[in-house]
Amino acid sequence: MRTTRLLATACVALALPLLAGAQAPDLKIPTFADLDHKAVDSVNLTLDTTILGLASHFMDEHDPNSVQIKKTLAGLKSVQIRSYRFDSDYVYSKADIDSVRTQLEQPGWSRLVQTRDRNKNEDVDVYLALDKHVVTGVAIITSDPRKFTIVKVVGTIDVDQISHLQKSVAGLEEHKDTIVALAP
Image: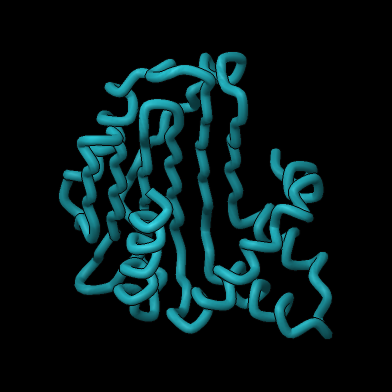
């Protein structure tokens, strides 16, 4: 699954031209509030322009890595992440995940990657929101019997910034408490 996710990430990175400020089509991600107490690990993160802008103010303007992250955050309108891991198989409703996939089949979204590993019941989907050949958003869904993650990003981002952002995301774990404190 790690290889599949890396492939999906690479495809997104290669496919994203300079994003424009057009509005991404609507995608409603369920809150999955009933799963919070059932999950071993969970992430429920929603960041809007205000929070993203606030986060950029705390970054060191003398650190090149922070400058790149700040540049990336300036173009984003929202980031939503829902991720859950469970002790047993299919604690979550596969229908909930499929309802998100169904929304992504609507006009305005284009599937970039779809992988299915039937032996492991692992699925990965990557969609781009397009408006007249301009990418306005990205949605990623990964699922297997014990975990799932849904990510929705709306806004503008330069392809060159993606590689800088990937390196930075790897370092986010050490700043997890700060990020959680900033989230509403």
